[in-house]
Length: 384
Image (cartoon, rainbow, N blue to C red; front, side, top):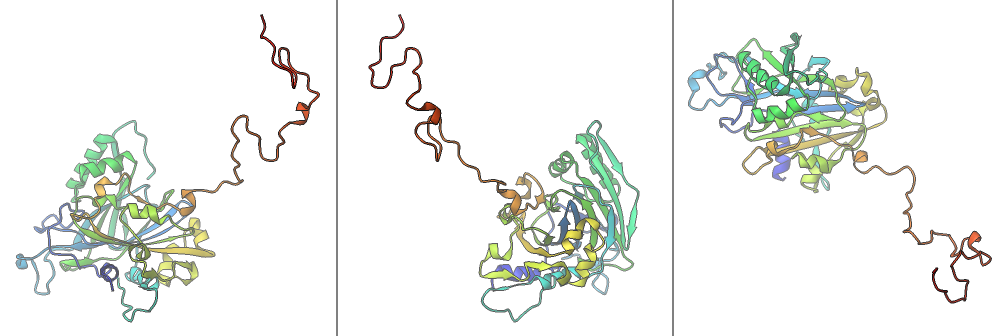
C-alpha cells in the first residue's frame, strides 16, 4: 500500500497533525486562551448543479500543548477551550446554514473507497450576499444566524479600504486576521466572508473536530475555499465532489488536488459513476431539499474523491501562486465540439472539392475582355 493510500485513510482521522506551531492561523479559540491554534487537515463535501452548491465543511483544529501540560485538565482537555472561531470565503452569500450530524463524511468516504485494481483490500477502514457595487469601500455585516452550536455572520467587504476594515473587524471580534495579499484577491473578486463561532458546553481536547457545517449558495462553478489557507503551514485535504457531468481532472491537478488514479494508476475509486439513490442516506439528506439540485437526484451522477498532500509544505504547492481559488471545470467545457462539421476554406484561386476546373459560365464561348488574347493567340501589345 502506497503512502498515498495510507494518507486517504489518515485524512479523516482528524487529529493526525504534527505538533508544530502554524505559520498563519485560520482558527482561534477564546481571547483568554494563551495557546496557539490552527485548523487541522481539511475535509469537505460538495454537491453542485444548475448554479447551486451545497458545501459541507468538517471543521477540525489543532492546539500544540508540548511543554504546556499545565493548560490541560485531568481528562487531557484544554482548560477553557469551549469555543472556536474561523472564517470561510465564498463567491456568494449563503442562503442556507445548517449544522449536520457527525458521520456523513465517513459514510461517503466508505462508499467511495479506494482499492487496488487487481485485488480487494482486506482493511476497509476509511474513517474518515451578492457582490456589492465598487463605488465605495465598505464593510457590511449581516445579523447573526444560529444553527446548532454555530453562530454565523456574513460580511461583504468592498475595495482596498474595505479589506482593511474587514481585518480590523475580525481582530476586534475575536476572529483570526487574514493575510493582506490573500485578502486582496477575495475582495477584488467580490467574495463574501462567512465568520463562524462554535460554542460547546465542555472543554475540548487539544485536537479533534466538531459537527460538520452546511452552507448553500449560488455559484457558476463548483467551488472549494483553498487559497485562503496560504501561509498557514503544511496541511492535507480530503474532498468529495458530487456533480451531474464529468470534471476536467487536469484542471484540478493545477490546484494540487488529484484523484487516486492520477496519483497512482494501480488504484481506483469505487463508485465514481453512481446514482443519487445509491448514496448513503446521510449524504442524500444534505441535497434532497434543494430544487436547483433536482437533476442530481435523477439518473447517473459522478462522485469524485480528491486528495491534496503536503500543501503549503516547503516542497509542496504554494497557494499564493494560484491565480484563482479552487473552481472545478467540467470536461465538456474544455473543448466543446461544434454543432456542425467545419470544412476548411480553400485558399484563393484553389478549386473547392467537387468543383470542375472550368465553371459553366466560363466555357469556351466566353468572349475575351478587351486587350485579352484569345485562346491560342499570342498576347498583343498593351494599350498605347
